[in-house]
Image (cartoon, rainbow over all chains, first blue to last red; front, top):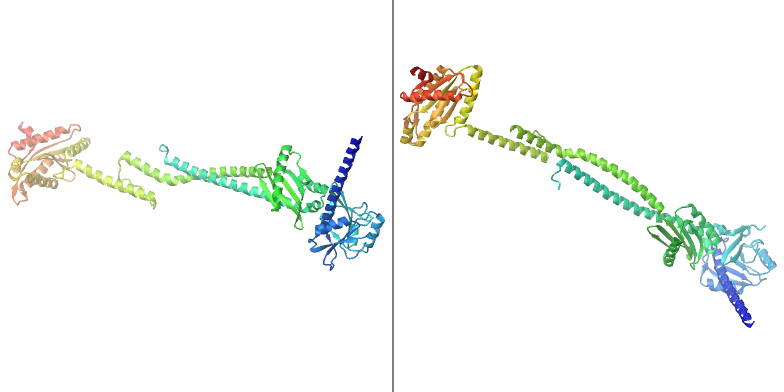
Length: 173
Length: 420
């Protein structure tokens, strides 16, 4: 009996470790992909000298982004990572990753940025359908991208054809 | 080994072999050049295809979108020569692929091994290619903002290129054969440029060898080597003709007196006898001999005797009619053949000879002078060809009679009959 319990414990620990490893890999991919999204999106002209990425409610991801893009450039500009709280006022950023698990909170942030030229990205289910620009989900470390093209256009963002070609496109409605 | 062949055949063989060799070399060079060009073109086409596909794949690779990769590779099915296409991410994990249904597992394993070896070299190069006997492949690095995202490998069979090569070989072979036949026909015409002058020379030579006519000449306006050959041949013929005439003359002429020799006299006598018999006209023979010639030799020496003979020959020539033949018959004995002359005419000529000789003074080299006389025997008759010796015999007997009767006189064959 004790043996069985021990084996079950080992199995649980192994699965937990594997899941933790998978989660870390996905987080790294997400960090990489956020930078790559910027290569396929054109923002309206502005005077900012840095490329600002905001991350709400996910300090681990923010830290990963800081490590990944330290000393690197996106769209020819140095990268600055902003850690944001759920209710924090969001200004002067180019890309916002919304990690909040609460749909109402996400929707409030989306509504606040509805006409702002901010590329909103989230891994939450139904994010694109609720007005977010890019929804990214991982299946066996392969990305599935959903784009709300209407939302992007409303924000003055132009998403290039190659990204549109591989994504699932939906309208806001 | 070619001695038995005619020049015409040798020329044809030479021109044919030269043409064949030239065409063979040209064909091989063209074939190799086409192979190299087609190989480069196949690789270039595959690179172009890979460029386009890699560009389209960039976003899918950037976001590890395997489904999109497969979707973007699927149209390769339209190209029957594409065996395999694989897309790998930056960690060389397979992201998506296209595989021809006819590709066997062993082939697939071999190709994947080759691709794997190539991808490890992509760290320094953005594109690689390889051409083997059965296939050619290209590997392209996929980048986003100069950051490697992964790689695209495309493998194509060589059938497309070999089909073009087969078509080229067929066209080239047919063209080569047509050109070779054309050159051979042209060679048939061209060889006449060399063999026709030789044929003319050979035919002329055969003609001369057959009829011994050394007066024949090759008429030519050529300025080339054949012209020189013809001129040399003509000059040689002229020289042969000249020597032939000289030899002929020597064979028929007496060296001391310049008169016809005994052989010539007998030949001409036979011909004159034939004419006499045909025309039933008499012909005359005058045999004459220097009286006491031995005494002249003994007293004045042989040079004096030779001088007497030479000057007597001159008198003989001067006294004979143009159509008579004077000859030295042997020693101090001469003969004069008188065509169309009866006995009276012949005797008249003989007497004229005798009187002129008797009246002639022979002056020797040392200034001494001497007189000499001749005895003559004359015979005239309608000749009987084949029996000319009888004519000579009759004249000789008359000569003997003239000698016997005191010399310096003329006796005829009828005189002998009268005495008999």
